[in-house]
Image (cartoon, rainbow, N blue to C red; front, side):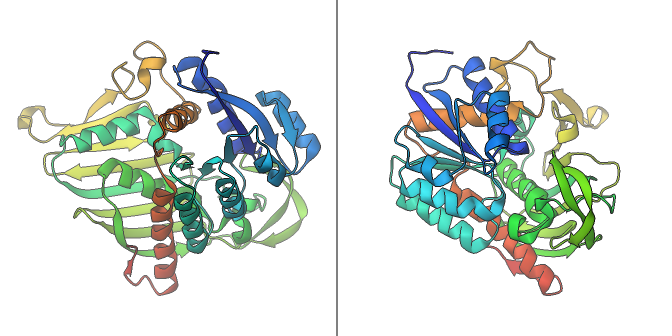
Length: 390
């Protein structure tokens, strides 16, 4: 890490599961990547003073606070990184942008289309030297980034069909506690926004096409759960009291892309046996690619132009120095993990800010994903009627 580069002073708002992941990214990125600015972990903000102090000591933040508005007002803060539940994204991000701070905000961008539109508008108003990015971190898995490179290079020809699914099973137990992710006021939606947003963004990122219309259904299998006694990771321990689930457990939808491709999408927390299976397969006129987050260091590639005696999916180990992001890490074959995507996110964000260019994905990109999620909700409410998203 070079101490002769200018600092980029970070305030992280929130300190749960994503707080740990973002902290890991900020801490590790400058130690493995040669960055043009130095991310300084200046301030960690949370509602509970004792809890946020414990998190700051554990993760390496210099100071703590309980008031995000005061954090935004500080002159020694350059970046506001938002990892709170979606219900507070818009208020915090808009205030930060109006104060001239760069913003990194976790996905989905907001709980509602109206909030996402307001956030994108605030990013546009912020001026040419203030930037905002939404944290679709799976774009930065080297195999996913390489999939995009292959598709964009024409390696699979004309993109015709996309199959994307994000499968988890952490809510199969009907007595799993009622966390904030199961409450519409905090989360906006359930599997649709939490998981479906990733499937939508990754499919658009890899194909380079945008979804223009959808037809979908939403379903809630468990309508009442024990209230949360103590949080731990995505879940926690249950209390004796119970409350209503106000979001979906499952989202299924089809979609059309503006480049002519057709897609099918699945987002579920009820896929028994699947832990974190974000899967995408893109079929083209001369080949196909296949990616699964549960096997995140490899990519399937099918070359339909090869002689028929040699056709079949090839398993590419995406660990070569020439693969995206890999040159900073380990020798060939030494795999990466979930946390590395957050270091890559920090790297890309810092490089863009230092170069005075818009980091990707932008709030406009986050808004476009929100339009797709909103389209699925509207379609589901109207017996799966075809609903335009652009």
